[in-house]
Image 1: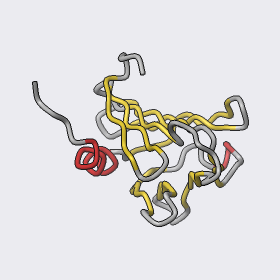
Image 2 (image 1 turned 135 degrees about the horizontal axis):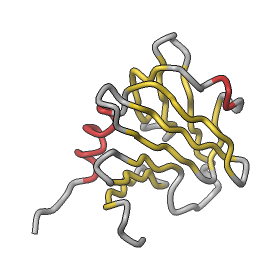
Image 3 (image 1 turned 90 degrees about the horizontal axis):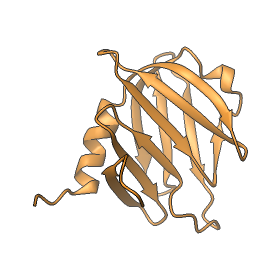
Length: 129
């Protein structure tokens, strides 16, 4: 059985997370769901829990093109950069002890989760937690 290293694979997956935001909608409770369609027509999903996000207006993100995605190691903030120079940020609440702050669903049915303390979780999207 091959052992996956979520830290190494996370960099690769974030580097591939590029394309046009085709869905940007609010979710419960006070959260957001994004879908990005890449150059191959594949769909990526980004969801979050127990974290703040900016901008909070879902319409402000729709139609933008993702050109970068990185995690600031000091603040644990996910910064998704757009081609127009603006960005979307997921800012974790350090007082919240959630299992994960956000998840990125790949076209290959993998899910990359970012957890408190800079921990990564990588699994098949169909696997139970």
